[in-house]
Length: 441
Image (tube, rainbow, N blue to C red; front, side):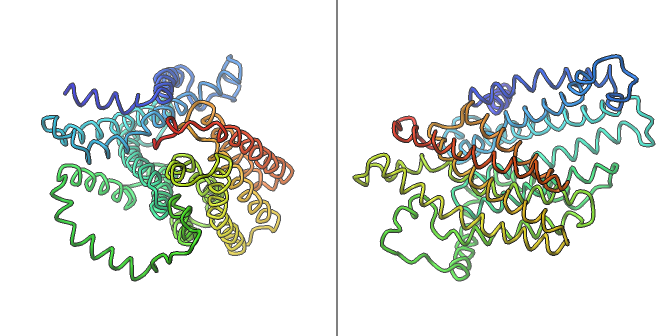
């Protein structure tokens, strides 16, 4: 049992940055739950409490900040599990695969337990027609399923192939859709939650089976590879395309047009006329930031070219930057066309569609330039830049949907200006790049 608990501890404290997130969550969550007990969640702003409004609002959001911090602290869990499961060190630990599975389940169950406790405390002393036990257990199951989808999405988006990133985007969509169903009440068990539980079962089977399952599925993988080769044409060598091949930016049209699949799934899962179509439109714009996030791999993949070409650091950075701009231009361009098509289908005002298209371009520029600044991993400064950029994009999206075009345009200009500043910082970092520190995460 001690080995399982050490693994759980490692999931939350894998890096110094994640340890800080864990510390913030461990402080904010109990303080926020205690605040719900003392100040019920429906009283802030009602005039029935003597505390200042800012204090009431802070207590209101503290539990959610704590939960998000703990979830962010465990973001390395998929990578750690994959390295243990595929490495040889797993054989040194008695019943290693079973203990790794128990540690993973214990982490997700712990987060689900904290989420269910927070949800129950939020409705404390509120006259409800349903019992607190039902709120707790339904929220517990929903959270456990949702965290499994989130971990899967993080693992898939971290893969090199852009197709895997599209699959990860689809899982992100599912993880957003399940909690939205709880806004209007406690729904019955849904097929989406069944998919999540089945995903946990598949993960447990794959982890426990180990290499035996890999050998058993080898013929199936070969047949699927043959089908893929027939459907997707093989890459044709062109002189001068070596940089794209090593960087993983060749054939960008596959990922660009593949974005239509999660968008279509989003429009199918979220009712078009429901108020949560706002969330769907926000997700569509945030996909442009996801498209630019692949640029964060530029420096570590550039190590493959450094010793193979007689380029200076500026020449190397210039070629890598051009390759990623071409790659992201495809993704952003297709997203602009999709937003225009969705806006025409929903009969949205022209101003909203035009501003949303501009936001996609602005967020793509900012995220691409921000990715170039990441040369030594994700630190405090890069994390702050990511938070500011994402917050500005989300605020601009809601301003667009509320027809507050002045705010939306101002924030779009801010994103472009931030992109210019990010690129200036990236130029400075690339000129004194230390290849001993620039390694794959």
